[in-house]
Length: 456
Image (cartoon, rainbow, N blue to C red; front, side, top):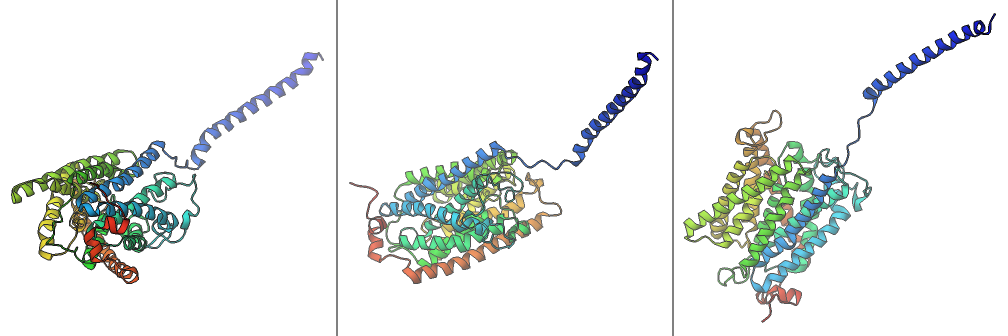
Protein backbone atom coordinates (compact mmCIF):
# COMPACT_ATOMS: atom_id res chain seq x y z
CA UNK A 1 0.00 0.00 0.00
CA UNK A 2 1.27 3.37 -0.88
CA UNK A 3 2.00 5.97 1.75
CA UNK A 4 -0.99 7.98 0.51
CA UNK A 5 -3.23 4.99 0.93
CA UNK A 6 -1.96 4.46 4.48
CA UNK A 7 -2.58 8.10 5.44
CA UNK A 8 -6.04 8.37 3.91
CA UNK A 9 -7.95 6.74 6.82
CA UNK A 10 -6.05 8.88 9.30
CA UNK A 11 -6.86 11.98 7.30
CA UNK A 12 -10.50 11.07 7.14
CA UNK A 13 -10.53 10.45 10.91
CA UNK A 14 -8.74 13.72 11.67
CA UNK A 15 -11.05 15.62 9.34
CA UNK A 16 -14.08 14.12 11.04
CA UNK A 17 -12.69 14.99 14.46
CA UNK A 18 -11.97 18.52 13.35
CA UNK A 19 -15.46 18.92 11.95
CA UNK A 20 -16.93 17.54 15.15
CA UNK A 21 -14.83 19.88 17.26
CA UNK A 22 -15.87 22.82 15.12
CA UNK A 23 -19.51 21.88 15.50
CA UNK A 24 -19.17 21.55 19.26
CA UNK A 25 -17.34 24.87 19.42
CA UNK A 26 -20.06 26.58 17.43
CA UNK A 27 -22.78 25.16 19.68
CA UNK A 28 -20.83 26.23 22.79
CA UNK A 29 -20.44 29.75 21.41
CA UNK A 30 -24.16 29.93 20.67
CA UNK A 31 -24.91 28.70 24.19
CA UNK A 32 -22.66 31.39 25.62
CA UNK A 33 -24.52 34.00 23.58
CA UNK A 34 -27.88 32.94 24.99
CA UNK A 35 -27.17 31.68 28.50
CA UNK A 36 -25.62 34.81 30.06
CA UNK A 37 -28.53 36.94 28.89
CA UNK A 38 -30.93 34.69 30.75
CA UNK A 39 -28.85 33.77 33.78
CA UNK A 40 -26.64 36.82 34.51
CA UNK A 41 -27.54 38.64 37.75
CA UNK A 42 -29.02 42.13 37.48
CA UNK A 43 -26.39 44.83 37.28
CA UNK A 44 -25.87 46.71 40.52
CA UNK A 45 -27.16 50.30 40.49
CA UNK A 46 -24.44 52.71 39.48
CA UNK A 47 -23.86 55.99 41.26
CA UNK A 48 -24.47 58.95 38.99
CA UNK A 49 -21.85 61.68 39.32
CA UNK A 50 -24.33 64.34 38.22
CA UNK A 51 -26.83 63.41 40.94
CA UNK A 52 -24.05 63.34 43.51
CA UNK A 53 -22.76 66.76 42.47
CA UNK A 54 -26.28 68.21 42.57
CA UNK A 55 -26.91 66.86 46.06
CA UNK A 56 -23.59 68.21 47.32
CA UNK A 57 -24.53 71.63 45.94
CA UNK A 58 -28.03 71.37 47.42
CA UNK A 59 -26.59 70.61 50.85
CA UNK A 60 -24.48 73.76 50.66
CA UNK A 61 -27.52 75.77 49.52
CA UNK A 62 -29.56 74.65 52.53
CA UNK A 63 -26.72 75.65 54.87
CA UNK A 64 -26.67 78.99 53.02
CA UNK A 65 -30.34 79.38 53.97
CA UNK A 66 -29.39 79.27 57.65
CA UNK A 67 -26.03 81.01 57.57
CA UNK A 68 -26.38 83.77 56.63
CA UNK A 69 -30.02 83.62 55.39
CA UNK A 70 -32.13 83.05 58.53
CA UNK A 71 -29.52 84.85 60.66
CA UNK A 72 -29.76 88.07 58.63
CA UNK A 73 -33.52 87.79 58.10
CA UNK A 74 -34.14 87.50 61.83
CA UNK A 75 -31.29 89.86 62.72
CA UNK A 76 -32.87 92.70 60.77
CA UNK A 77 -36.28 92.12 62.37
CA UNK A 78 -35.13 92.55 65.98
CA UNK A 79 -34.02 95.74 67.68
CA UNK A 80 -30.40 96.82 67.28
CA UNK A 81 -29.55 95.83 70.84
CA UNK A 82 -30.41 92.18 70.12
CA UNK A 83 -29.13 91.56 66.59
CA UNK A 84 -25.94 89.79 67.64
CA UNK A 85 -27.84 87.51 70.00
CA UNK A 86 -29.88 86.22 67.04
CA UNK A 87 -26.79 85.78 64.86
CA UNK A 88 -25.03 83.96 67.71
CA UNK A 89 -27.96 81.66 68.33
CA UNK A 90 -28.20 80.69 64.64
CA UNK A 91 -24.47 80.06 64.41
CA UNK A 92 -24.27 77.96 67.55
CA UNK A 93 -27.42 75.98 66.72
CA UNK A 94 -25.92 75.02 63.35
CA UNK A 95 -22.73 73.73 64.98
CA UNK A 96 -24.54 71.97 67.82
CA UNK A 97 -27.00 70.12 65.61
CA UNK A 98 -24.27 69.03 63.21
CA UNK A 99 -22.46 67.30 66.06
CA UNK A 100 -25.66 65.78 67.46
CA UNK A 101 -26.65 64.58 63.97
CA UNK A 102 -23.38 62.69 63.57
CA UNK A 103 -23.45 61.28 67.11
CA UNK A 104 -27.03 60.04 67.25
CA UNK A 105 -29.41 62.12 65.12
CA UNK A 106 -28.86 60.33 61.82
CA UNK A 107 -29.39 56.98 63.51
CA UNK A 108 -32.55 58.15 65.30
CA UNK A 109 -34.00 59.34 61.98
CA UNK A 110 -32.55 56.91 59.42
CA UNK A 111 -30.81 54.19 61.40
CA UNK A 112 -32.44 51.31 59.56
CA UNK A 113 -34.77 50.24 62.36
CA UNK A 114 -38.28 49.05 61.57
CA UNK A 115 -40.08 51.11 64.21
CA UNK A 116 -42.67 53.56 62.81
CA UNK A 117 -41.47 56.21 65.28
CA UNK A 118 -37.66 56.25 65.22
CA UNK A 119 -34.75 54.78 63.31
CA UNK A 120 -33.06 52.95 66.17
CA UNK A 121 -29.43 52.77 67.27
CA UNK A 122 -27.94 51.01 64.26
CA UNK A 123 -25.93 54.01 63.05
CA UNK A 124 -24.93 55.72 66.28
CA UNK A 125 -21.72 57.69 65.63
CA UNK A 126 -22.27 56.77 61.95
CA UNK A 127 -21.44 53.12 62.64
CA UNK A 128 -20.92 51.17 59.43
CA UNK A 129 -20.76 54.27 57.23
CA UNK A 130 -17.65 54.93 55.12
CA UNK A 131 -16.84 56.59 51.84
CA UNK A 132 -18.01 53.65 49.74
CA UNK A 133 -21.39 53.03 51.41
CA UNK A 134 -24.46 54.27 49.55
CA UNK A 135 -27.83 55.55 50.67
CA UNK A 136 -29.96 53.79 48.04
CA UNK A 137 -32.16 52.27 50.74
CA UNK A 138 -33.23 55.68 52.01
CA UNK A 139 -33.41 57.40 48.62
CA UNK A 140 -35.89 55.07 46.92
CA UNK A 141 -33.28 53.50 44.66
CA UNK A 142 -31.27 56.64 43.86
CA UNK A 143 -27.65 55.72 44.50
CA UNK A 144 -25.80 58.42 46.41
CA UNK A 145 -22.78 58.23 48.66
CA UNK A 146 -24.25 57.88 52.14
CA UNK A 147 -22.14 60.78 53.36
CA UNK A 148 -23.91 63.05 50.87
CA UNK A 149 -27.34 61.92 52.05
CA UNK A 150 -26.22 62.40 55.67
CA UNK A 151 -24.99 65.92 54.94
CA UNK A 152 -28.16 66.90 53.06
CA UNK A 153 -30.46 65.71 55.83
CA UNK A 154 -28.18 67.27 58.42
CA UNK A 155 -28.76 70.75 56.99
CA UNK A 156 -32.53 70.27 57.38
CA UNK A 157 -32.00 69.26 61.00
CA UNK A 158 -29.91 72.41 61.55
CA UNK A 159 -32.26 74.96 60.04
CA UNK A 160 -35.48 73.74 61.68
CA UNK A 161 -34.66 74.64 65.31
CA UNK A 162 -33.07 77.88 64.12
CA UNK A 163 -36.47 78.91 62.76
CA UNK A 164 -38.04 78.43 66.20
CA UNK A 165 -35.95 81.08 67.95
CA UNK A 166 -37.70 83.90 66.09
CA UNK A 167 -40.80 83.41 68.23
CA UNK A 168 -39.07 84.33 71.49
CA UNK A 169 -36.25 86.48 70.14
CA UNK A 170 -34.98 89.22 72.48
CA UNK A 171 -36.07 87.48 75.70
CA UNK A 172 -34.39 84.10 76.25
CA UNK A 173 -31.09 83.05 77.78
CA UNK A 174 -28.46 81.86 75.34
CA UNK A 175 -27.74 78.74 77.40
CA UNK A 176 -31.45 77.95 77.54
CA UNK A 177 -31.73 78.11 73.76
CA UNK A 178 -28.84 75.68 73.35
CA UNK A 179 -30.15 73.19 75.91
CA UNK A 180 -33.67 73.33 74.49
CA UNK A 181 -32.44 72.77 70.93
CA UNK A 182 -30.36 69.75 71.95
CA UNK A 183 -33.41 68.19 73.61
CA UNK A 184 -35.87 69.25 70.94
CA UNK A 185 -34.06 67.82 67.93
CA UNK A 186 -33.57 64.56 69.83
CA UNK A 187 -37.13 64.00 71.01
CA UNK A 188 -39.21 65.96 68.48
CA UNK A 189 -37.41 66.56 65.19
CA UNK A 190 -35.68 63.22 64.63
CA UNK A 191 -38.82 61.13 65.28
CA UNK A 192 -40.93 63.32 62.97
CA UNK A 193 -38.28 63.11 60.24
CA UNK A 194 -38.33 59.33 60.57
CA UNK A 195 -42.12 59.13 60.55
CA UNK A 196 -42.41 61.22 57.38
CA UNK A 197 -39.37 60.28 55.27
CA UNK A 198 -38.18 56.83 56.29
CA UNK A 199 -39.81 53.91 54.48
CA UNK A 200 -40.74 52.37 57.85
CA UNK A 201 -42.13 55.65 59.21
CA UNK A 202 -45.71 55.98 60.40
CA UNK A 203 -46.76 58.83 58.12
CA UNK A 204 -44.76 57.47 55.20
CA UNK A 205 -46.71 54.27 55.52
CA UNK A 206 -49.97 56.19 55.47
CA UNK A 207 -48.98 57.73 52.14
CA UNK A 208 -48.64 61.31 53.41
CA UNK A 209 -47.04 63.63 50.86
CA UNK A 210 -44.28 65.91 52.10
CA UNK A 211 -41.77 66.60 49.37
CA UNK A 212 -39.32 68.80 51.26
CA UNK A 213 -40.51 69.40 54.82
CA UNK A 214 -43.94 70.98 55.25
CA UNK A 215 -44.56 68.84 58.32
CA UNK A 216 -40.99 67.96 59.27
CA UNK A 217 -39.63 71.50 59.11
CA UNK A 218 -42.29 74.19 59.01
CA UNK A 219 -45.24 72.86 61.01
CA UNK A 220 -42.77 71.35 63.46
CA UNK A 221 -40.94 74.66 63.91
CA UNK A 222 -44.13 76.74 63.87
CA UNK A 223 -45.84 74.75 66.63
CA UNK A 224 -42.70 74.69 68.79
CA UNK A 225 -42.43 78.44 68.27
CA UNK A 226 -46.03 79.11 69.34
CA UNK A 227 -45.68 76.93 72.43
CA UNK A 228 -42.44 78.71 73.30
CA UNK A 229 -43.95 82.17 72.86
CA UNK A 230 -46.84 81.25 75.17
CA UNK A 231 -44.70 79.62 77.87
CA UNK A 232 -41.92 82.21 77.88
CA UNK A 233 -44.33 85.13 77.77
CA UNK A 234 -44.22 88.53 76.15
CA UNK A 235 -41.19 90.79 75.89
CA UNK A 236 -40.67 93.43 78.55
CA UNK A 237 -42.42 96.55 77.30
CA UNK A 238 -44.53 94.66 74.73
CA UNK A 239 -47.34 96.88 73.52
CA UNK A 240 -45.69 99.98 74.97
CA UNK A 241 -42.14 100.22 73.61
CA UNK A 242 -41.22 100.62 69.97
CA UNK A 243 -40.26 97.12 68.79
CA UNK A 244 -40.04 97.77 65.07
CA UNK A 245 -37.34 96.02 63.00
CA UNK A 246 -34.06 97.85 63.23
CA UNK A 247 -32.93 97.10 59.64
CA UNK A 248 -35.26 96.12 56.83
CA UNK A 249 -32.19 96.13 54.61
CA UNK A 250 -30.74 93.16 56.48
CA UNK A 251 -34.14 91.47 56.46
CA UNK A 252 -34.49 91.87 52.70
CA UNK A 253 -30.99 90.50 52.12
CA UNK A 254 -31.73 87.56 54.40
CA UNK A 255 -35.06 86.82 52.73
CA UNK A 256 -33.44 86.90 49.29
CA UNK A 257 -30.74 84.50 50.45
CA UNK A 258 -33.48 82.23 51.75
CA UNK A 259 -35.15 82.20 48.34
CA UNK A 260 -31.90 81.30 46.59
CA UNK A 261 -31.05 78.61 49.12
CA UNK A 262 -34.56 77.21 48.94
CA UNK A 263 -33.80 75.75 45.52
CA UNK A 264 -31.46 73.35 47.29
CA UNK A 265 -34.15 72.76 49.89
CA UNK A 266 -36.93 71.95 47.40
CA UNK A 267 -35.26 70.82 44.18
CA UNK A 268 -32.60 69.00 46.18
CA UNK A 269 -35.28 66.95 47.91
CA UNK A 270 -35.90 65.21 44.60
CA UNK A 271 -32.49 63.56 45.22
CA UNK A 272 -31.80 63.41 41.47
CA UNK A 273 -30.92 66.07 38.91
CA UNK A 274 -33.80 65.23 36.58
CA UNK A 275 -37.28 66.38 35.54
CA UNK A 276 -38.56 66.02 39.09
CA UNK A 277 -35.99 68.50 40.31
CA UNK A 278 -36.94 70.83 37.46
CA UNK A 279 -40.59 70.73 38.56
CA UNK A 280 -39.62 71.55 42.14
CA UNK A 281 -37.42 74.37 40.88
CA UNK A 282 -40.07 76.09 38.76
CA UNK A 283 -42.60 75.75 41.58
CA UNK A 284 -40.16 77.42 43.96
CA UNK A 285 -40.19 80.38 41.59
CA UNK A 286 -43.91 80.56 40.89
CA UNK A 287 -45.38 79.88 44.34
CA UNK A 288 -43.13 82.52 45.87
CA UNK A 289 -44.06 85.07 43.22
CA UNK A 290 -47.76 84.43 43.78
CA UNK A 291 -47.34 84.80 47.53
CA UNK A 292 -45.42 88.09 47.31
CA UNK A 293 -48.02 89.64 45.02
CA UNK A 294 -50.87 88.45 47.24
CA UNK A 295 -49.34 89.93 50.41
CA UNK A 296 -48.48 93.21 48.70
CA UNK A 297 -51.98 93.48 47.25
CA UNK A 298 -53.77 92.69 50.52
CA UNK A 299 -51.57 95.04 52.51
CA UNK A 300 -51.96 97.78 49.94
CA UNK A 301 -55.74 97.52 50.01
CA UNK A 302 -56.14 97.17 53.77
CA UNK A 303 -53.39 99.50 54.98
CA UNK A 304 -53.08 101.83 52.05
CA UNK A 305 -49.36 101.12 51.70
CA UNK A 306 -47.42 98.02 50.74
CA UNK A 307 -44.35 97.51 52.94
CA UNK A 308 -40.99 95.85 52.40
CA UNK A 309 -41.67 93.82 55.55
CA UNK A 310 -44.87 92.59 53.92
CA UNK A 311 -43.12 91.63 50.70
CA UNK A 312 -40.43 89.73 52.63
CA UNK A 313 -43.08 88.00 54.73
CA UNK A 314 -45.01 87.03 51.61
CA UNK A 315 -41.81 85.68 50.08
CA UNK A 316 -41.21 83.37 53.03
CA UNK A 317 -44.89 82.37 53.21
CA UNK A 318 -44.83 81.24 49.59
CA UNK A 319 -41.60 79.30 50.06
CA UNK A 320 -43.03 77.59 53.13
CA UNK A 321 -46.30 76.67 51.43
CA UNK A 322 -44.68 75.13 48.36
CA UNK A 323 -42.17 73.10 50.35
CA UNK A 324 -44.41 70.02 50.81
CA UNK A 325 -45.91 70.44 47.34
CA UNK A 326 -42.86 71.28 45.21
CA UNK A 327 -42.56 67.94 43.43
CA UNK A 328 -46.28 67.14 43.26
CA UNK A 329 -48.11 70.16 41.82
CA UNK A 330 -47.93 72.14 38.60
CA UNK A 331 -46.51 75.68 38.30
CA UNK A 332 -49.93 77.35 37.94
CA UNK A 333 -51.32 75.52 40.95
CA UNK A 334 -48.17 76.54 42.85
CA UNK A 335 -49.02 80.22 42.22
CA UNK A 336 -52.51 79.67 43.61
CA UNK A 337 -51.21 77.73 46.60
CA UNK A 338 -48.65 80.44 47.37
CA UNK A 339 -51.27 83.18 47.15
CA UNK A 340 -53.73 81.32 49.40
CA UNK A 341 -51.05 80.64 52.00
CA UNK A 342 -49.87 84.24 51.90
CA UNK A 343 -53.39 85.53 52.56
CA UNK A 344 -53.86 83.10 55.46
CA UNK A 345 -50.49 84.04 56.97
CA UNK A 346 -51.30 87.74 56.67
CA UNK A 347 -54.57 87.17 58.53
CA UNK A 348 -52.86 85.36 61.38
CA UNK A 349 -50.07 87.91 61.66
CA UNK A 350 -52.23 91.03 61.36
CA UNK A 351 -55.44 89.88 63.06
CA UNK A 352 -55.28 86.65 65.06
CA UNK A 353 -52.02 87.41 66.88
CA UNK A 354 -53.25 90.87 67.83
CA UNK A 355 -56.58 89.59 69.12
CA UNK A 356 -55.03 86.74 71.11
CA UNK A 357 -52.28 88.95 72.49
CA UNK A 358 -49.41 86.48 72.30
CA UNK A 359 -45.92 87.71 71.44
CA UNK A 360 -44.56 85.71 68.53
CA UNK A 361 -41.70 88.16 68.01
CA UNK A 362 -40.92 87.41 64.36
CA UNK A 363 -44.17 85.66 63.38
CA UNK A 364 -42.75 82.16 63.18
CA UNK A 365 -46.09 80.48 63.85
CA UNK A 366 -47.99 82.97 61.69
CA UNK A 367 -45.77 82.30 58.65
CA UNK A 368 -44.09 78.90 59.09
CA UNK A 369 -46.81 77.19 61.11
CA UNK A 370 -49.82 78.45 59.16
CA UNK A 371 -48.00 78.39 55.81
CA UNK A 372 -46.86 74.84 56.48
CA UNK A 373 -50.39 73.69 57.36
CA UNK A 374 -51.88 75.32 54.25
CA UNK A 375 -49.13 73.86 52.10
CA UNK A 376 -49.44 70.35 53.52
CA UNK A 377 -53.20 70.16 53.07
CA UNK A 378 -53.07 72.02 49.76
CA UNK A 379 -50.63 69.42 48.45
CA UNK A 380 -53.37 66.83 48.77
CA UNK A 381 -55.62 68.98 46.59
CA UNK A 382 -53.31 70.38 43.95
CA UNK A 383 -51.41 67.13 43.37
CA UNK A 384 -54.47 66.01 41.39
CA UNK A 385 -53.67 65.40 37.71
CA UNK A 386 -56.87 67.27 36.84
CA UNK A 387 -55.31 70.38 38.39
CA UNK A 388 -51.93 69.93 36.70
CA UNK A 389 -50.29 67.84 39.40
CA UNK A 390 -48.51 64.51 39.12
CA UNK A 391 -51.53 62.58 40.39
CA UNK A 392 -52.04 60.22 43.32
CA UNK A 393 -50.95 56.69 44.06
CA UNK A 394 -53.04 53.97 42.47
CA UNK A 395 -56.46 53.74 44.09
CA UNK A 396 -56.12 57.01 46.01
CA UNK A 397 -58.69 59.76 45.50
CA UNK A 398 -58.38 63.47 46.23
CA UNK A 399 -60.59 63.08 49.29
CA UNK A 400 -58.50 60.21 50.56
CA UNK A 401 -55.23 62.06 50.04
CA UNK A 402 -56.51 65.22 51.70
CA UNK A 403 -57.67 63.16 54.68
CA UNK A 404 -54.20 61.62 54.94
CA UNK A 405 -52.60 65.05 54.76
CA UNK A 406 -54.84 66.35 57.55
CA UNK A 407 -54.03 63.36 59.73
CA UNK A 408 -50.30 63.91 59.13
CA UNK A 409 -50.67 67.56 60.13
CA UNK A 410 -52.55 66.62 63.31
CA UNK A 411 -49.96 64.01 64.30
CA UNK A 412 -47.17 66.56 63.81
CA UNK A 413 -49.01 69.21 65.81
CA UNK A 414 -49.71 66.81 68.67
CA UNK A 415 -46.22 65.29 68.79
CA UNK A 416 -44.48 68.65 68.55
CA UNK A 417 -46.88 70.59 70.75
CA UNK A 418 -46.83 68.17 73.66
CA UNK A 419 -43.14 67.33 73.32
CA UNK A 420 -42.07 70.97 73.05
CA UNK A 421 -44.13 72.04 76.06
CA UNK A 422 -42.50 69.35 78.20
CA UNK A 423 -39.02 70.31 77.04
CA UNK A 424 -39.56 74.04 77.69
CA UNK A 425 -40.68 73.21 81.21
CA UNK A 426 -37.66 70.97 81.79
CA UNK A 427 -35.25 73.69 80.65
CA UNK A 428 -37.03 76.29 82.76
CA UNK A 429 -36.79 74.05 85.83
CA UNK A 430 -33.10 73.33 85.26
CA UNK A 431 -31.64 76.72 84.34
CA UNK A 432 -34.54 79.10 83.68
CA UNK A 433 -35.69 80.40 80.31
CA UNK A 434 -35.59 84.17 80.67
CA UNK A 435 -32.84 86.58 81.65
CA UNK A 436 -33.46 89.18 84.33
CA UNK A 437 -35.76 91.96 83.17
CA UNK A 438 -33.00 94.54 83.45
CA UNK A 439 -30.72 92.43 81.25
CA UNK A 440 -33.52 92.06 78.72
CA UNK A 441 -34.16 95.79 78.62
CA UNK A 442 -30.45 96.54 78.23
CA UNK A 443 -30.25 94.12 75.31
CA UNK A 444 -29.02 90.56 74.97
CA UNK A 445 -26.05 91.52 72.78
CA UNK A 446 -24.31 93.19 75.70
CA UNK A 447 -25.69 91.20 78.64
CA UNK A 448 -25.35 87.74 77.08
CA UNK A 449 -22.37 88.17 74.77
CA UNK A 450 -20.50 91.26 75.92
CA UNK A 451 -20.50 93.00 72.54
CA UNK A 452 -22.61 95.29 70.38
CA UNK A 453 -23.45 95.18 66.69
CA UNK A 454 -23.01 98.88 65.97
CA UNK A 455 -20.62 101.49 67.33
CA UNK A 456 -20.91 105.25 67.26
